[in-house]
Every structure is written in C-alpha cells, then in structure tokens.
Image 1 (cartoon, one colour):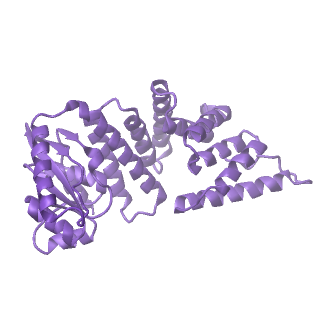
Image 2: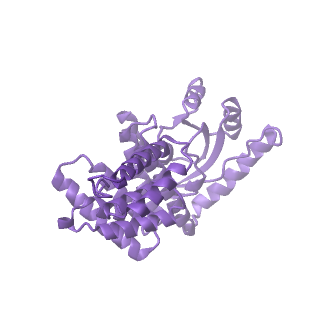
Image 3: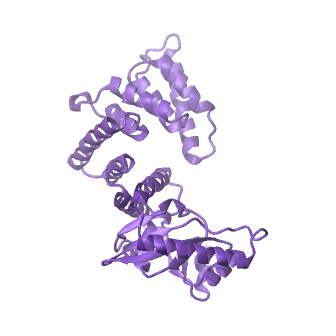
Length: 344
C-alpha cells in the first residue's frame, strides 16, 4: 500500500474543476480525454483512496471487482467496460498547463440501460468530452470555489472514516487522502474556511500519539485556528466543536474553561441538527460544568437517537454508561457529588 501511496501523490494538477462529480465509492470507469494520467491518478486517489489502473485485458474486470477506478480512452470501450462491471462512467478532460495539467470532471454518464441504449450513452460520452475539453482549454476560474467546497466535503468523509476505524483502508492511506484533498481544495479557493478547519483537524489527529511538547503545540494551533475560523464564520459547526473539545480537555492552568466548553459545544449541538457526536459532546461539557440535569437531558437524546452505524452505536453505549453513573450519583445516600465523573 505504501508503494501505491507514493505512486499516487507525485504531484497535484494545476487546477481542478468538477470535483463534486467524482464518486467516492463504487466501481468506476474514467473516460479520459487528453494527456495527464499522473495528475488524474492523484485526484482519483485523493477522493477514492485506491489507485487508478489502465483498462488492459483481464486487469480491467479485476480492477473493477476491487472497487478501483479504471482509465480508458475510447468512449465505446468505456461504455462496454461499465456494462460488464456494472460501473459508473465518469468523463474527464485533461489539458496541459506548463508542466502540470488542468483537470475538468463532468457528471457521470446516464446509466439506465433500459432508457438509454449503448448508442445513446456513446453519444453522451462524446458530447461530454467535447464540452469538457473546451472548458479545460479555457477554464472557468469561478468554478474553483465549487471544487474547494467539494474537496472539503470529501475531506470530512475521510475524517469520519478515519475516526470510525471501520474502513479496510489503512490509516496511512486515509492521511494521504486528507493531505491531498486539502491541496486540491486550496487550488480552487485558498481561503475556504472548511479547508482551514480541516487542516487543523488533520494536524491534531496526526499528533495524537506524538510526545507531549509536540502535541501541546498542535493543540495551541488548534485553538488559535478555530478561534480565527469563528471570527470569519461565527456559525461554523466544526470550529465550535473543536474549540469546545479543546476547552473541555485543556486544564485550567493552560486556559481551559468549562463554561466556554459548554458554550461552544452547545452551539455545535444546535448547528449539528441532532448528530449524536455533537449532542454527546454537549452532554460531556455539561457534566464537567456540574450541570447534571441538563446533561441527563442531552444524554437521553443520544440514547433515543437512531444508531445504525458502529460510531453511533458506540455513542449510544457511552451515553447509557454516563446516564447510569449520573443516576447513581444522584441516588439518595450517594457519597459522590453529581457530575463529578464527567469528562473534563
């Protein structure tokens, strides 16, 4: 896998448009018009986490069976390969820009074989490539912010995968994806606040197991970066969550404040629209601030929420344990002060 990662990260393209069209999962045939396979492979690896392969004999179906992208030149070959898999067909145009390549993705081609014949899909492929090549030659730089937002969305998914520990991809691959997505997003909009917060998250995750001085420095950067993001966008969900977590975990001597942990995690709870990650964080802050009644209310929301994913199931179990402990603390005759066992 390390060899594949080194192959995939050899260089970013000059610009990327249409990143929102690249499927993150599922068999994929990439219909490429133009030269620049190395840059294209880098982008596909950033989104999908698997290396791209050329369509060549039996390796084509082998690659598709392993949920990897396959690059083809001819429209007819792309449609035929997609029908065998079955797979989505993603058109993309490549255009030289100095020593690098401009890349423009279009929407996947029609996949309904009942309503769209092979001839229809081949024609759609030719039309898509013609349009995309022209846009690659004369790029719409205003489209950059859209790709930056798409990169931020893909980045958030990679972080969720990394934290869930349920994906077969190793952590080294997920970290490589995250770094590449940050680079791709900055090509479109270097000031995108979601990407800036994403860089903070990546730095914090990478330094979790580092020596204390290194970890402490990363945490200070996290706090400063989250505060700057909130000055730029006061209702930024992840910035509130990260800053709340910082105040919840940092000791008072280093500036950690439980009242600010409650305020920021309450904002994340409100902005997160019921996502149990933010509700549970809010509950833990309330526990640390010795507000057991409000904490129990938040914990009940986590317990009653749907838990259809390993991460949400773990959050529910954590909420159940905290709720039971809090009920025991509040029971008559208990010698433990309410909220004393909350994280802080």
